[in-house]
Image (tube, rainbow, N blue to C red; front, side, top):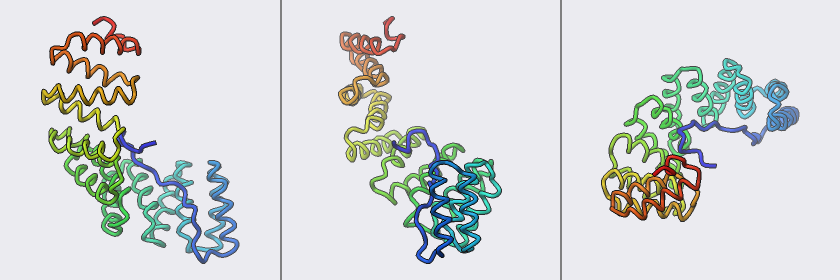
Length: 268
């Protein structure tokens, strides 16, 4: 599943790799804890990871997993403690920065979350795509759209294959009424993923708003060809056909929408 389109922050998952010098007992408890955590048995996993760090105090992966488990158990202060220990022991552990920032946001500490993202991005500029993406989502929810644009652009630059950051960037640009740049962003997505109907739909909407119904019709028809059961592009197609003077085409599109269960189209 894609991570985009809802502007939901992405939680880093359990850390499964072991350090090269884990002691035998620390290794054993870590593996046992991981097996339990993967079954979502968080309390039992905590006991194993706590045992692992008792045998080996410097064990950032175990501290991170403890933070993750306590996070799941809603024991936030303990989660913060272990995420911080993981970062202190391994400043390259992006997952710990990411989840700690998410936890700060859950607690309403938006400023702390932003500061932590910014610190991690500066410290790990070549590995910060996920951090930039989540920072962009946080800025978006706070209504700081210009800052969100910058964060999404950084995320996209980190990973040329990252279409999610580009899509969210396009949505924010639309909200900023920068339709020309937004259209370019969505077209870039479609060039990379020709069946990306969400980006195609946004291009059609932009063309429609700008009065270019001929182009809008083409985009909505492309979407319908990919997925004939999507109602929104059919309704938008009907509108552009109406504006283009094609009443027969409009009626046909509305009939299709009615058939798919969109009752308002049935009375047209």
